[in-house]
Amino acid sequence: MSKKIDKIKEFYKQNKKTSLAWYLTLRALVIVVMILRFLSGDFASVFLCILTLILFLIPFWINQKLKIELPDLLEIIIFLFIFSAEILGEIQNFYGIFKHWDTILHTINGFLCAAIGFSLIDILNNSERFHIKLSPIFVSLVAFCFSMTIGVLWEFFEFGADQFFHYDMQKDRLVQTISTVELEPEGKNIPVVVDNIDKTVIYSNGDGKEIETVITGGYLDIGIIDTMKDLIVNFIGAVVFSIIGYFYIHNRDKYKFAENFIPVKRFEKEE
Image (cartoon, rainbow, N blue to C red; front, side):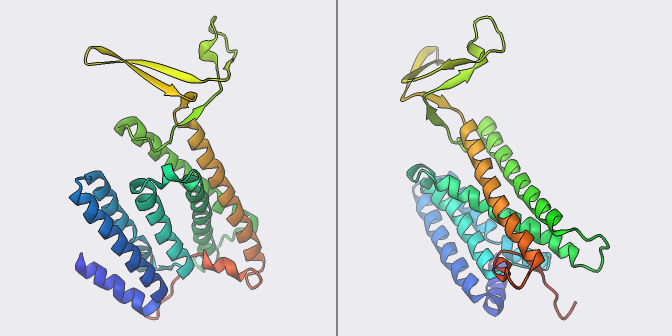
C-alpha cells in the first residue's frame, strides 16, 4: 500500500501540485478521524474511513489505467465531494445538522456525472477509430441520461441498504398530510386524505411484549420524499451541465471554462 501511495505522490508532484495538496490534507483528516473512531469502538465509521481512502484513489486510477486526464478543479471537487459525503455527512452527521446538506451533494453529483458522461462521448466523437459522430444535442442528451442513470442506481443502493441492513440512507421525514387508497373502506381506488396529522402511534411486539412508539409532529414518511428530492436535484445538476456542454461543443473557445469539469483523453509520448 505504501508503494501505491508513493507512486500517487510522485505522479501528482509532477503533474498536479494543487490536487496533491488537497489529496494529502483530506487524507490526513480521514486518518485522524479513523483513529479516533477506532479508539472509541465505532468500527462502522472506521469502515467508512477506509472506504473513503479507497475512493480517493479513483482519480489516480482513471488517469493511470484509462489514460484519461481529470482537470485539477474537477479532481479537487471529487475529493471534496467524497469527503463531504462520507466523513462530514455520515460520520459527523452533517446530513442531520444541516438541512440541505444532502440536497447540495446530490445536485453536485448530477452536475459531475453529466460532465463525466459528456467527456466519454466527446472523447469517442474526436477519436479517429469511430466513424459515427454525434451531434451536440445528442452528446448533451447522453450526458444527461448518464447522470440520471447514476443517480437512479445510487437510489437503488440506498434502498437496498435500508431494506436488507436496516440503515436509513433514504432519510425519513415527518409529514402532516397523507393520501392513500389503503384507508378506503370498500377497497376502491379512491384516495383517502388524512390531514393535520399531529401524532402517530405504532404498536409492535418485542420479547412477547407490546411496544408502543409515539411519533410526535406528524406521520413518518419512509424515504419516498427523500428519494424523489434527490432525483429532482440530480436532474437539475444534469440539465445545467448538459446545457453547458451543448454550447461548449458549438464554441469551445468561448465556453472554455467548461474544460475545468471535462476529463480528456491523455496521449503520452511513449504511446
